[in-house]
Image (cartoon, rainbow, N blue to C red; front, side):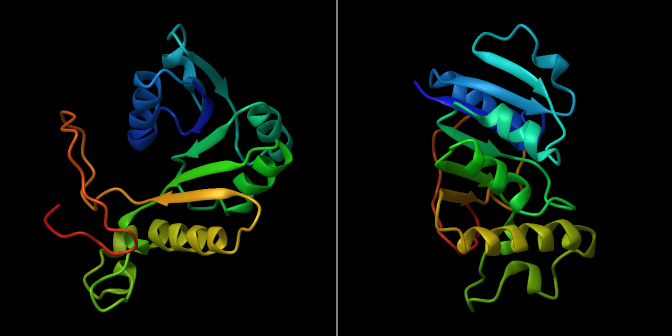
Length: 171
């Protein structure tokens, strides 16, 4: 069993990470702006925290084996998480990204496609910048996980496909 901190634990992706971590028997610190709905859950320590507060975040992350972040990217540069994670002694970081930073068959990024929706460009651009910062990171074991472009709730199937850096079509 690992001790895991999940940032954005009450959001769409974060809540799924929380459920999977608990299903696997991990102890979870659920960091969210409003974690009240997580009060009383077995295996969960809810923490209300503004992740822009580097000192508070480092303190909340101390003693954890890994941190998983499902926070939105807009206005939150990678160092907002990476600096406090390093200060807290975290070695393993998983960041939930988006499809915009994935590559198309011609090796251009999805976000650079003329068909990419304008409404999602700011968040996707921030996510791509976050990934670029992670690629420069030498002190952390990191993963940038991009769920499918259409990420919806549903019944757990147990089936998945890995596409590495390329967008999977029809997955």
